[in-house]
Image (tube, rainbow, N blue to C red; front, top):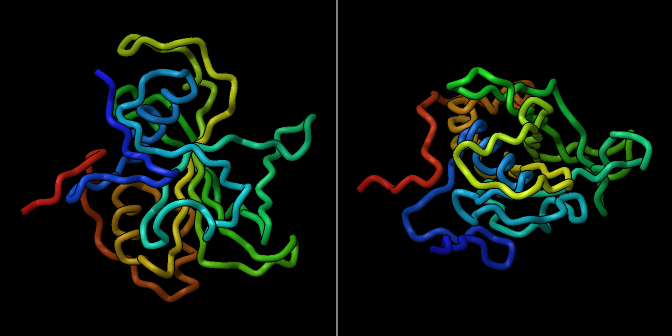
Length: 214
């Protein structure tokens, strides 16, 4: 039976009352790894967009929500590994250190998360904005073909990543609460402190698609 698609015109469209709140581990193992190996996804819910071809405010979706995308790692030079993160109006710049994502059951390193801030203009004199991007990538230990649970095709040679794009100033409180629970706050803590925000409490992470409590 074909799974329903929750993506329309590059935007996530869920039934009323449903939310998409995967943990870091779920994003890497259940979505990114499956996408890279051309395995069936749990749901067709993350659109595929070349993120750096557009400014963050021009990407599909609602500014007031976190926007999830599959994208490709575009290298800046053909003979190197440095990524090209320049857009039409500015560039994405990494902040803090990359975070390791470890599988909860096997304690195996499965991915890395990089946090970036968008700057208007050209480096090194760009102007920092409130646009944030979390970039998830697989690591070599996760790039082995483990098809014990799903039937996979040959590995897709595209270097897929998953990114979350959000505008901090619009929905700070809910963002901090969720990211604290999922360990995503990390390298952004100093960014929030600069804006004199106060961190909220933590809670347990949501399931991938959680029905609103009545």
